[in-house]
Length: 255
Image (cartoon, rainbow, N blue to C red; front, side, top):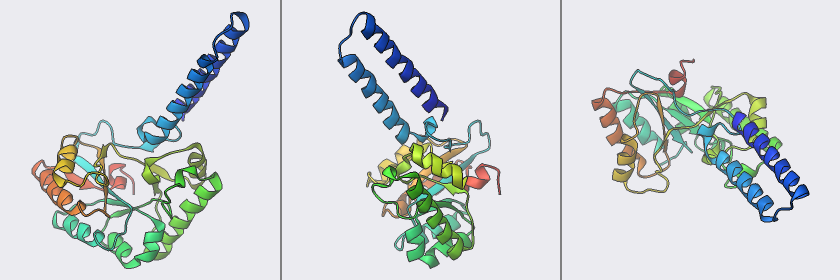
C-alpha cells in the first residue's frame, strides 16, 4: 500500500507542476497525456506484481531464511484427474504442500478435497468461482467470492483457513478492501513455474531449479497434465539437495 501512496502523491505533484508550468509558460497537451499514461502503466503493473505490495501486503517468500525449506503450493484444485496423483507423489517423498482451492471445485469434488486435508496438507482460499473477469469485481462481490469459498472449505473439510491467493495473482484496491474485512493473509510466490503456458516438463523443471533457495514459495497447478513429471523430478532434486518441503503455515512459523 505504501508504494500506491507514494505513486499517487508523486503523480499529484507532477500534475500540479504541469498545471503551474502551463499557467505561466504554456505546455503541450501531450505532457498531460504522458503523465496519465505513465500513471496508468504503473497502476496496472502494480496489479500484476504481488511482490511490489502495491495494493496490499503479500507474503511471497521468507527472506533471510537459512534453513533449507521451500513451500510447494498448488492452485486451482481439487482436480479429478491429477490431485490424488499429486498427493501420492507427495506422500512418497514425505513432502507437505499448500493447496489453494477454488470453492466450486471443493463443492464438486468433496472427497478429493478431504483427501488433501487427511494427508496433512494446508488449505488456502482461491476464491469461489475463479472467473476470468474476477479482477474487475466490486468490493462486495469480492467479499462474496471469498466468504462463499470459505464456507465450502469449512463445511466440507471441517477446516478454516486464513490464507488467500488472488486468482491469476492479480490484486486491486477493491480486493484489498475486501481482504481487510476478512483478514486473510495474502500468499504469493517468488518462483513461478508457468506450467499453464509451458507444456514441456523439462523446460519447467529447468526454470524452477535455477531459482530454488531457502524460504522460496513455488507456484504449481494440480490441474495440468505436466504437474506429475514436473513434481516427481522436482521432489527428487529437493531430496538430493537436502531441502525440506513445508506448508505455508510452517514457513510462516504459525499454526
